[in-house]
Length: 206
Image (cartoon, rainbow, N blue to C red; front, side, top):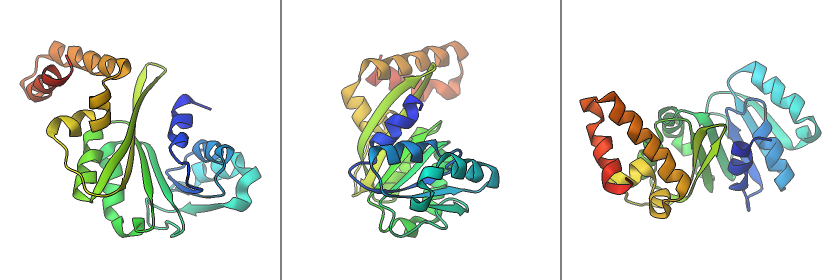
């Protein structure tokens, strides 16, 4: 199991029911069952990945609801935790916003965006969610950020939306490495459109 999947799954506990949006091959739910969940919903809008998930999760199929649907449209109301990973932040924010009412019973949202991570934090502010945990990891030379949302209002600065309130406060070695690498890349491009983010990195990280 990949480090990324293990880290995402680790944020599910103490809850016991989880929906994986865009479940793909079902590896996240496999790890979640290993950790002790007792019910899952595997959601995907493509038949192939859903069938693959059914095969990979065959030992747990009696505890899983498989849904061929888009986003949250068929979300089971008894789900405690929703996971959206491996998609762009803009798409994740759109999926959550489109069916926000389906989240009324959900206690935690775990998000791992591949890009446009700031869009997820902007969604949190607009939808009255607060960021309760964040983590940055590196796997095969790729940086991944995991964000945990729970109900509750919060305000974030531009820097906190860009870098993450918890990650910015902690400023661990991996976080600094990620943004230093990105900073050097942006500087090499020498484009006026990147000046704002360059100044933000200089002010808070470099």
